[in-house]
Length: 218
Image 1 (cartoon, helix red, strand yellow):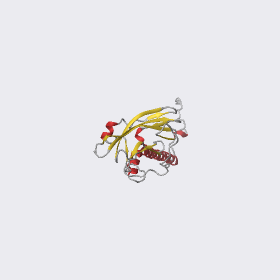
Image 2: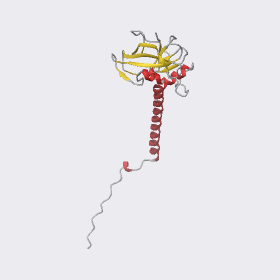
Image 3: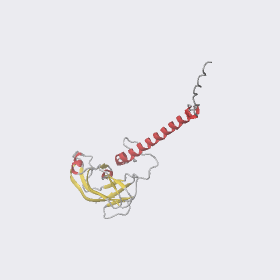
Image 4: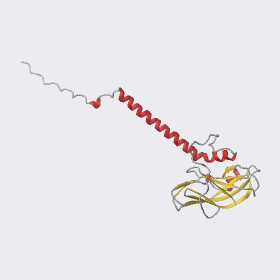
């Protein structure tokens, strides 16, 4: 009599999780991934707009508004809709001359209307110093957001002219402030048109909400 061979082991049934996903679920996950990519793309676009507005709109606004037109980004593109009104009156502040907005005060001192000729030998240099004080909240401040509009209506940023860059300090620094802290003074120099005795207006463009606060310089 032949011995009976031992029974062969049988493979356990494949659990449900081992089965490939149905076509419907595949389309579902593709939709999730696609939707997520769309959201990321929208966030990237929003971040780009915010970066352009905060990082570049200051310069764009200065150049566009100086010609009497509306505010815009470099290249003549308009600012995105839905932004707050740009022009804002100054909050109460002291000691004068100063401007204040949303918990930040900018003190202005040492205004010298005739430091010397600009590089083009047509404009002249104006030098002043600004100090930022956080009176409430936390803020990021930069002297790059302080411009001057001259008597011809043109606006310029500090240090744009070669001679202005030599007579002033670094206008691109940024500082984080909490309530009670200050940054500065920063020495800024501008190349402006008109006579030294002509009216000058300091224009502070708050980078946090793009509000524009103006001050007639002494």
